[in-house]
Length: 599
Image (cartoon, rainbow, N blue to C red):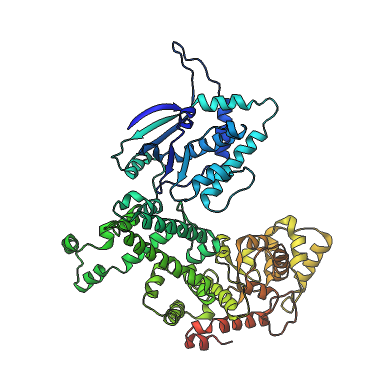
């Protein structure tokens, strides 16, 4: 590749030139800080004479790699963030001239945004953020940052000096690639060791890079690409909604874009449905030698495309053999079907809760999609219910305890099914909050082994937590508690542990004394008995903290058949609560389990 240092003035003087940002490029993503840093650097830069020459030092913007498409048309292979920001600064500086003296700037167009050239030339205003699509959002944010930066400069600032430094003392390293070289190969080589192309970006190039379809009907292909670009944005936008994302995922996305999840999922499902794996089982092919021999002629999908960072791209690249518009259409429809299936589940209240539950407790979504194939909606709904039932085949509800098996799954199912049972309820279980806020299994009434009270907090703790009941019949300890509260005189912490045991009573680690709670609320009341926990939960819900519906019902005593004391979580309350859990989830439990745990 030929390279040279050229000034911004030279770039901006390419009056008839148009620069295209190809589809395989990342969208514009410079932040406010990056734009501000560039403006500050240029403003603070002072050109100096270079000894023994007629030149001055310059500020370098780093490389821009281009490949000529036509006489005055260039593909920007690398450096599109820099050339876009350069355009935005030049555009702002141009506004200080009257219209008939404004300079004609080079054209800039994003291949995936049909009207981007017109938007950049005519619609930037520096006032509002354009949320039409993700690229316009970042571009308009950057332009507003530029406008604000200049407006906020004091009286000593000389915009003419800045413009001169930007045009004449700012340069880029200009690499011009041969027309015969493959653009994606160049880009990949340039970015090796930096930020490589993602599977999503490479797959996007398969669909939107016109050079991949030299023999296709140009107009038909262009319309299809515009349609795909728009639908691509809609899918990405939908997946950016955390409510949707955490419905189909257990964790945060660690990919550059969330749409890549769909592509990876399609590859995983293809591997799960691989007929060759079934054939090898039928043929009893097990040894290393047998597998090696078989794969020579009949490789599995994983053997063909691998499981490295780019295996998903290779899998999709294999779908584009004919390089035709029909092939583009066919492959894009497959992607849409996957997304629309997930979207259909998300919009169906029952499937949202039940599929979301399975994913939350560890069922791989690829296995759910595999089962969905060729099943009617009713058949699939029946399978989902049976799949939940299968999780509790050998479970005895009366034996579920704190930190034991099944406890989180049961409490989560109780909350979800409670919401589902209310057909008039429009709210849905917030899987995003459940997964992001790190919910805990917590004791409704604290147990002594979890509680540690510092000496200086003993009086406050007793005031908040000691409520005399029929279980408190030790007159000596009652008098000791009364003396501590009245006198304010504290006792040794180890001695106070006996009082904690007395106040809180017998430990109960069974599910009758457990609920789900976000870790923030849990940490704020771990030392408290029922009465104080109840006050804090009411306070946090008023403040807007989400309290799971069953947890709220517990502390409001909605489950209790005979409410005698709102401040104490007694044996009657626990029995009623256990029976309610059993009743809500009974159609997921075997009848033997139900009978064995009747209270």
